[in-house]
Length: 125
Length: 399
Ligand code: SF4
Ligand code: SF4
Image 1 (cartoon, chains in turn brown, green):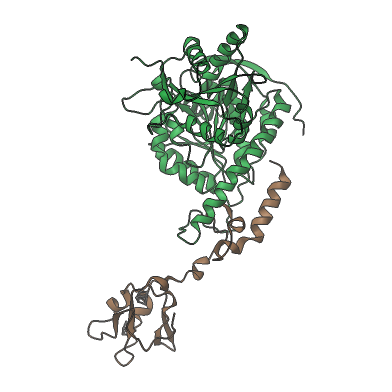
Image 2: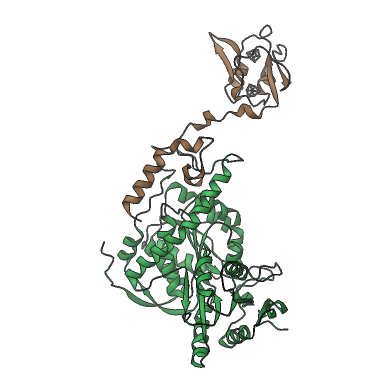
């Protein structure tokens, strides 16, 4: 194959690089083979879509040990000035790890079914 | 480019040796392989080239064909020109990875030496292995003899790596009949092959650490369909690229290639459709029939994926009757795979010829001139309605 057509192809890929993760991109605009041609795109994948149960936090019980903050695989727990502020559910997939690691005697996090009204969250999905 | 230089040399080679020579000249960065009869000799010879320092290829001896193609896929995704080779049950064992190679659009070139699938176990030629893989998304090129195997492999690199195509290609030859039969093969100078295929540059190479990327991500209801649609488009576009590469190869070697080969079809009234080594014997039979004043012609399908339906319709719409020869059964009760597709290709033509199927040569059963001649004479007797007696006829089987 010729050098120029290769280069052109690379340029084309460069231009459409963001389409790889653009939800409405048509088949002609996508990089071939489902390649995601750049890094860090998982930030745009909101794993909170899957959740069937959500953590409900009781600030009055919380001792701010930060175990939930440390163990959450999606970094959902928000901390400011060494105090837990709540949980941002955008990427919370409802795995329940936070409720599990919260000290037994404290029990500041409970997992509730998704249809339950919740308070004390730092952000809504 | 100095592609016109014709310092070719002729050597007596088996099909496997011709394939190994083509691979040596293609000089892939990585070869991952596992031996299986009748393909073994190809990778064995290639490993000798590696051992003797003739090629600077990373040779990965793996533990199975599934691993052979997996390693080849990994190497291709990393940005290396990568090849493997297989046969029969080895190809079957690659099945999962075949679809992945095509879906990831990795331009892998793989010689496949056609051999019957077990069971009962058999090591000889039929096309059940590659015919079963015809919907895996690979381009498929069938070779009539060792020369074509050599030529097709070199062209396959250009076809696979074309930026508009980026699909894997399997190039086949008939097990033992071609792979172990010795013929005169005209080899190009190494440098001419090097110039013809050009440098390999995979645009998404994983080893390009400046540009991190993900290959093989999860795509669900949201993206999978679009990627398959694009893959289907690449297969259609491959027809043009295959023709262009075949023509350019012809300028280099005086052997140009198309999707199909028409043999004495100009004024033919009856035609046989064949693939692979049987085409050679069938041409001999056609010549004999022509000497007897019978207007017979032959169509050899060289490229089976993409399927040359339009071309077949063009050449076959002029004849009265067509006999399609399949070296594999589809076990659909409606004949072999090539028959189904040729018949479908004839549906849209204005003058539709009679069309019946001959399944032959399974498990390496010999197909000589007499059998081909009997099939040729058989289609001459077809009249309206007579096909339905037996649309599918088994040629050379003991009753
Ligand atoms: S349920 Fe899982 S994902 Fe959600 S906040 Fe707790 S640990 Fe994080
Ligand atoms: S683990 Fe429980 S107690 Fe510790 S910070 Fe989180 S919610 Fe508060």
